[in-house]
Image (cartoon, rainbow, N blue to C red):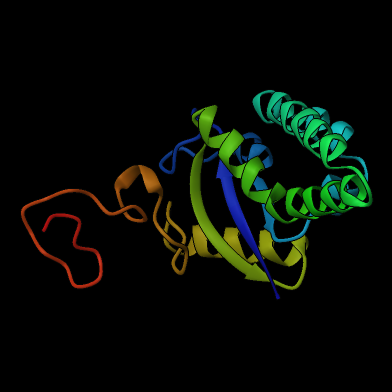
Length: 160
């Protein structure tokens, strides 16, 4: 089963979810991205990931310069390693890019494919009138990142 991160534009609200808003919700599959591996520049531009695109160009240039200075088989090994790493982290970069544009995470759904993920998500959404039942809360509400506080929580203590 695959995991999908459900993202919505900033103007979409849980209280007033219309059919047009539902069509703008994006399901980002977590995991390896073949598009990011095979055609990374086109994939970045297609997904409108401008900052990630610039970072990709800088990283490729830096890797090429470093690999050329080492010589031998190093350029090929560095290029393949970076391409695989980029393909593995491509989905996380896409979620990060959407969050930078103030998109909100509505939940995380496990499903066999995207169609099943959409059915599960909207079924949960409609059953709970505005919030998925088994989805994780949005990071904007402080659910996924630990915060500094006076309280000590086992495993998440940030203050000593």
